Image (cartoon, rainbow, N blue to C red; front, top):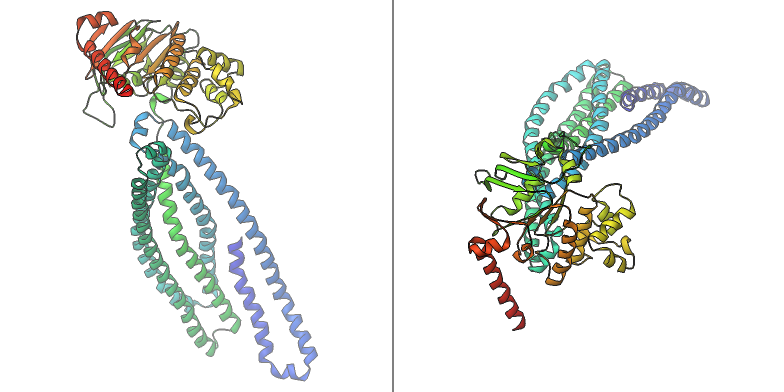
Length: 577
């Protein structure tokens, strides 16, 4: 409606000019009776002026309506895009997160959607209006003067062709610039999320240098993009201003031979300027369009990803509870990001229900991979993993992790909320009493109550306000809240000091009662009481048995224990020395 009104306004203005020009040319009438002449001019001007005023009011009203409406639509689209994109991302498998950095993913959720929303709103509003005005005004000026219109239209295809060729290269530049910007964001996000490690190694200058380098490269790319867009817009403006100059020159000639009235020339010129403004806006929109297309492409790249098969479908068993018999059958596995390098090869292991099995071995031999496969963070390449005779690939993965398995790792990550909510994260909808019961089982209730705010104590980002042992016990409570049949302990005490380890170990022993427990162990002193100890080397089991049996054999396990005891003696001597 705004565009249609902008098409008609030049013609109404031309009507007003024609009335003024008519009386300006009739000088004798105006001199004979000035008052009558003034009244006659006002009377003749009233109708076209009133029509023009109504159009101005209507234009203002519809401008408000479309801007307000489009703003609401744009925000709803951005909201839905963010929701759908986040859902698409979070339903991907772990291989997806291995391949993409967190900063890059966050950039697509924030910067790219913001760019897409801004471009969408601008291109829809100004683009639709400008195109309508161009089409309408071309029809209008054709009716006013076909000669002038024909000359002007002859020049347009050349500009469109040049613009299309330049646009292709600008789109490529924009994509590269946005990718580089995301890379710089990823560098900053990684440094800030690991600020304690940066501090520990006094690596601030190194991180500043790395970030500055990436930002400088992004700025250079953006400058090249700005140069191209500026060149395009400058050329377009030069062409459009040339059209105005040509219109005045040729229009004056047509007026001199009586083929145009002054009002028609003004109407033609105003309509031409409307076309000029519309084309200028389209050229300005070009940069926004390029950014929007690039940002939209990056958003929809992730948005169109199908959810990981392991995240959808699968069986949810409600009529029985798992006892916890686990069996690995001829399992072979390699990480998707490291193909052709098998971590486990024909791995076979039976874990009876209610027993504690510890997997030991030096780093890089596949211990944590066993835990990750049981938790179904990845699916096996060959073979199968069964719980009570059921292949875990037939189970819904969220049900498996949410109700059957409890996972506690070396460095538990807590959320920046209260202790109560961190424990409740283990089972959505749990009551406060259930949370407190889980904390007691994890030997955490006493230290929590010693805080001034008790269970409402804020733990800080990643739980930085709690000690290592306190964080670990909160994590144990979180895992126990869902009452899992199977507990997976992935080096759960290896990052703790001796006193904290002793307290947490007692909590783990209490939590293990009546459950099947898989322990991934670094400190061998913590697994001496395990029912079965498995020694893993290069993804293959080389020894299996109880602590006493394996020690008596004086094989790989014995050597691992001896090495650790020697290291502990050296550390003890260093501390006391």
